[in-house]
Length: 377
Image (cartoon, rainbow, N blue to C red; front, side, top):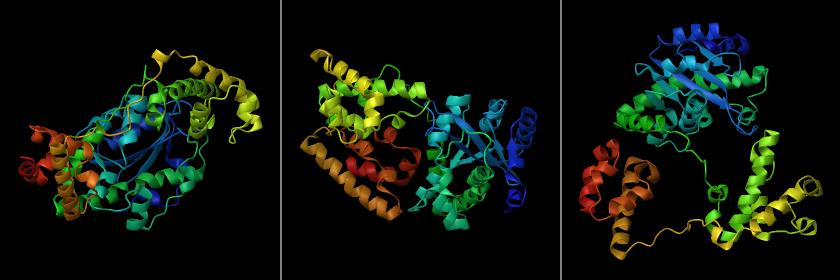
């Protein structure tokens, strides 16, 4: 299968920046049966992330759609909603959230090549690793963290973006054939369908400190201080239009929440606090710490314990049997244990009277539902 974009045409010629060109592209793409997509965003460079580029490939062309140009990217929605067109993505979870968040676009008939490679037992299932292994193509990792909101895009960035989709259809063809041989195509189609429905959860009204990594190991007073520090960082990040981690690192925030400095002298004692950082943010940090220390005892945040609930002896034995079964099934199928069944599922299945059939996905019921039913009965 040959992609016409592999010639010498400058990458800029493939960039769509006006509505007429986009509408003409949509008309052509609507006649295809398989399309490959990818997105580039700016989450590492701006406070509010957004989709900055949409790559699409058919078997005959690759185009780069610029949603930051004066165009309406929602014109693509009918293509994404058309069940007659297979949409190929690699690692689609983030893309599904982003398309829905920015454009209200929902995807029907998704095929995720990352999921497919996992169900084929690939040990390395990143796109770069797969393209190198199967096609000898290397992606330039310099552009993985590039600021895709900057304009104009360099020719090198556009070439990189085009490589992300120009071989996806061919990759899909290989993976689909191998999945058919193994009898696992329906498994991947079901998992892809579930990913297509993923949406970002609303965080409105939640305490930021409870989403902080390691919060379950912190004391309530530390969490109160951390909450104020996180709010302070968030305000600064929003004002500067940068991601919060560019203002202050999580490690530094954790140390401040634990040491709770009251003075500039105590700030100096924190080895990761530079003099410039103290001069720029010291007053605000001390105010945030003071606000956290002033939270009344009965208003302190309470994180859930990081410890798993203690199971009764009979239930624990059932979970152990299921884990032994999972290890054997994983080895038999050549799949990661998490793909076969995660711990949450095993614990739910171990509960007396669990609705086993309802808990399993279709492919799990077909592949080993009867085995599990016998094991937990």
